[in-house]
Length: 195
Ligand SMILES: Nc1nc2c(ncn2[C@@H]2O[C@H](COP(=O)(O)OP(=O)(O)OP(=O)(O)O)[C@@H](O)[C@H]2O)c(=O)[nH]1
Ligand SMILES: [Mg+2]
Image 1 (cartoon, rainbow, N blue to C red):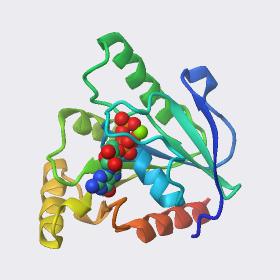
Image 2 (tube, rainbow, N blue to C red):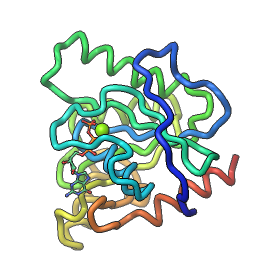
Image 3 (cartoon, helix red, strand yellow):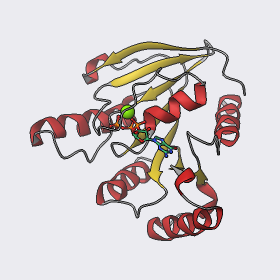
């Protein structure tokens, strides 16, 4: 899979504006600051396509990107960002979860976890949500450039144990070194072929 074209399509804030058509979608979920927007930029090779920032809470809407005129990436707002008021936070979370169950052409959810940290309570809730609704997902362990090769292996084992998942479904990745890019693109290609 080669991404030769990536374009910003639109952003929506409310559920009634969610795109409902038959273009396959790949969504990126995870806590704020885990690296969702950076991963979209890195996969598409377009820095600045999705707005990334060291300030958590950068992505506040559901952002759609058209890829290769044939599928979409969907950058979702992160959860676990404490600085917003509780009510606004609830709105984000419900929008996020409704997007996940109401999008008709959602093919795959990339669930991002920071490879350096044990999963947060909200990460566990997100996982339960994905399992409960039988949503197709794979786990991207981000920021692997911050660890040695041996430590990457140890952290993947820790995450798999903590979440009671097979360690094979974890893909270590780095938007800085390029680790994981080919595997993620292969996965996207195989999901599109299954359709
Ligand atoms: N070292 C390292 N830093 C990364 C990596 N990916 C993202 N970052 C940094 O992590 C910070 C957050 O990245 P974003 O891509 O904006 O995170 P996000 O998940 O989109 O955050 P929200 O939009 O707030 O939900 C930025 O400072 C990035 O430069 C990575 O693979 N390695
Ligand atoms: Mg973001």
